[in-house]
Amino acid sequence: MSDEGGLWLLALGPTGATALYWALYRYYRNTDKSHAFERETTVEAQPVTGSDRKVDEIKGTRASRISGENGGRIGRACSRCGAIPGERPDGTDPRRCCESNAQFASRTRHANRCIGVESDRGLPDRSCHDRRTPTRSRLPPGLRMSAADSSSAIEGTQLDARARLRRSVSNTLKGSAGNLVEWYDVYVYSVFASYFESQFFSPEDKNATLFIWAIFAMTFLMRPIGAWFFGRFADRHGRRLALTVSVTIMATCSFAIAITPTVATIGVAAPIVLLLARLVQGFATGGEYGASATYMSEAALPGRRGFLSSFHYVTLVGGHVLAQTTLLVMLTCLDAGQIAQWGWRLAFAIGGIAAIVVFWMRRTMDESLGSDAIEAARSGRARTSGSMRELLVHQWRPLLLCFLITAGGTLAFYTYSVIGPKMIQSLFAGGDAMTGVVINLIALTFLMLLQPVGGWLSDGIGRKRLLVFFGIGGVLYTGFMVLVLPQQTHWLPAFVMLAVAFVILTGYTSINAVVKAELFPTHVRALGVGLGYALANSAFGGTAPLLYQAALRTGHVIEFAIYVTLVIAVSLFVYVFFLENKGANWLDDAEKMSSRRGP
Image 1 (cartoon, one colour):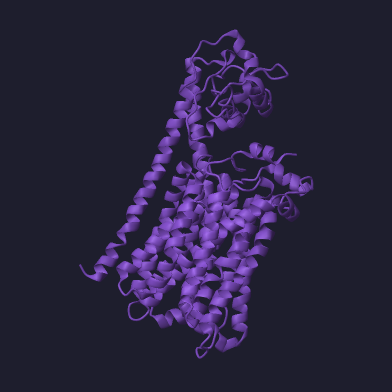
Image 2: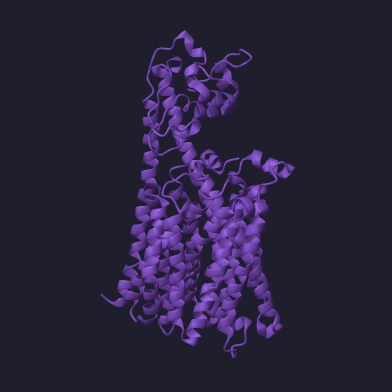
């Protein structure tokens, strides 16, 4: 088989990964149905007696809490809605709940599935049916349902479980679509940098390449500012609005870069406009990460947060894949001169147009921050929401932990997924540019499709083990990749080396969003996640391409490899000694975490 035939045959790999991803999706749907059925079929079918309309003392405080939530309606099952409402304080008929308000009936079904449920962990209230592991339900004697009512309740439960899953998936897709477009706008710069550098700097300038990557690095200086602004905004006004504003800013800057005149036309003003537009994009990107990571982690179902929140990096890597695909299409239809003259402008304009579509999609997302929390922040009652003082004084430990978790991961990410593809692009830059683009595209697609697999694994074995796998792999493999990959002359070993790096990297990328979201309480979650990430990303991630270019020019590539390895080793130390595997966290165990902090 020829080299070209083998290269295109390799493209079948993403097809197999896509089939695996679909199988995982079907598995989760089937699991959800079977768990809902098993939970409800364990209810004992007993004849309805006259005592069914009274609140049994056996229910204790759990029933009282649910009584407060649904207006005091606790008693025998309603024959119409399958709920278990009871006598209202005013003595009216409890079964009129479904006749007067269908929406209330749905809420009542949801709440009353928890009455009397005793799980193996003793979880109270609604958490019993939010867990993946099936629990055995046992209603007290005064609340036993008839067989007909039990069947009705089972049907309602299955519908409610499927509806919650569909809603969670819908919110995940809408949130991740904006993430995809924003990161496309970020990566289209790095993918097309070699083509448009002559449009912003004189072709005779030997430092043009260094200047282009310096602008790329300087945008990261704005990320902490964007993380502070949008994190505070998201904790006070909601995640959805913050995400909508950030994508609007990104679209505006992409259009601005697409129409900027060249250095031959406006002189030094051309690189200045490019720098300003990229700085503003860095500001928006800093806010996007914290808000989107928080939103997707909160919107995910408990027990499946790893899998669903992994789509945060599916779309982040997907932005890079989309940028590489755009370049591949242009190389197929245009020559290098045409891409350098005007093709790169089209690439930036595509990002701006896509952002307009995402703007509409994000307006229909559900808000993951409670309306009470938003109203309290707006009225001034919740002064700690999105407060920098609260974060630095009371939440400085998780903030420091978030920074250290990110440091090695973000440096490895830019080394493997930005510098690695640039190495391959340089290897085949002569008369075989198409080969380099295809290798990068297939490898990045492989990385993108690995993310749900890593998230799914973390739901089973825990987040810490995946992070430790990444840390050990990064320490052992980084130097080899950085020093040996640029020496390859054949596409197959080049692809394999990059693919191995991406398998290691998945241990971090697939779960880092939910790991950081689990560190912070709700009122400072977006701010803490965004700021901790942005500070580490600016210090280590964004500067990596610039440092590598400087190392190439001065012959200090070995020192660069040692630097990356040491930073990953520091993060590995944090993973091993400062993280718990499947321990209590702020997303799933807020009350327990609050009790640990004390008054």
